[in-house]
Amino acid sequence: PDVPPKSADGGNQEEFEQYWAANNAPLRLEGGWLERKAHPQLKIEKYWFNEKSGQTVFARPDAAEIDGPAVVPEFEDLRGEGPAWNMSIMDLKKALANEEENKLGLSYRELARRAVFTYEEFVPRVLSWHDYQHLTFWFFGGMDRPGKVKSQGGKGGFSNTGNEDLFAPAEFFREAATLIRERIGRMHPICLTYFVWTFVRAGVVDQKMLAAVGDHCCRGIVPMMDRCSLGTMLWNYGKLKVSHEEFFEVAAVELSRPNRVRSLAPRNFQNVSLAYNWRKHFDEKMYISLLQGMRLNMDGHRPVGPKCDKNHLFPYYCKDGSEVLADSFRISSLEVILRALRQTSISGPEMEACVASMVSYTCRSITESPQMMRDPGDVAKFAIEVLLTMSEMPEMRPALSLLFGPGRDRLDLPKLLRESARDKSLCSKLENAIRSAGVEVDGGDKAGGREGGR
Image (tube, rainbow, N blue to C red; front, side, top):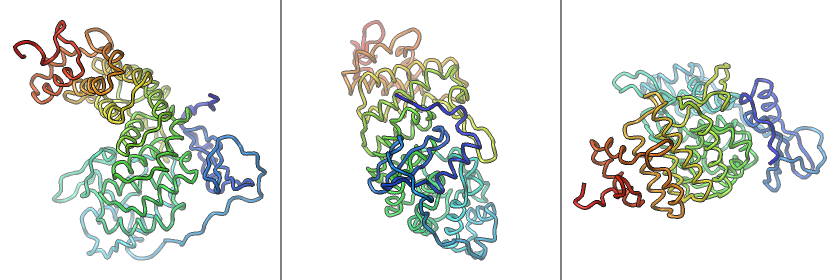
């Protein structure tokens, strides 16, 4: 395919300036077309969205330009007075974390207005905790709080588990949800993603707001999102078990584009795989694209260290210019991704090739990765997923069976059985998976199927 040049650095200041300006006041073309620019991670490609049909294209329509930019809706100025506005972000964070709202005269309505205003005024580069920790006073990750166990920092906040104790009360989120819904389009989609993520982690579900956010993303917004905001927004809906089929369809089209998928980092592949599995939304072209993208990342990451080399995958840069390298795949993350793919019944040659790359990456990680990249039993747990994939999708058994045995880029099942013997539960799961897949171990015997037992 005719793919534009890959971004060398994920976007420089000049490209971001063009991106912000073009999308704040998009050019208009006859027939209802708006000209926008994709995120600088995608080399600020021009694209066109039709307000009448909802179509997004990357080839300029045969339509003349109309004088003057698109009309931008006007919104009420949210700025107010009182303690919610006079206090600094950090002071507000401390007040909410220590449950001092009543003592300081802080109303949730004004706090929500301050929060939405803060996010609307912020002009983002990427979805980065390094930036948003200084804005998000309703999230207390990493703070020392009297009488409470110190919570994980913000970077750990993108785990799959929620903790309402790290966030402002639900009443704050209900007030914010109304404002976000009424002012949809005013907040940049990257900021909108992080705000919705705080709803997810706080355990607050507002169906009307989520419907409005999903509808907005379908209005030609998705290409404007950086790799982390697109993956995280999908994860938000999947985690909350909230359906928005059109958004998932639009995102699948975007994730099928070579220029998009080659920009993705390991965490993005994981979030997207989880989200589409949770929502049971299948798109064949997207999955082929994701499988190819993961192979490209895994096969090129040598040696298997904790961060992706910036010559292999561009880093991201915060507003202050600090460089953040993307986290690499862990064996445990490959287990999570493969489980999601298996539960979605993804099969075929591209899947076989991707699993082979996963096995090769795992074998390299065993010998090359520092201990901080490893988890107890991670290789055995990953092997179980490969075996279950073989068992549930027999058409892939011939190809995947070649991934087991002694030697390079193969999973040594007898060795894994010995290493997992102390963990009876894990060892039993591994034995059962071996038996289910019909893989031979120990010179021709099948695990658990030998005369006389173990």
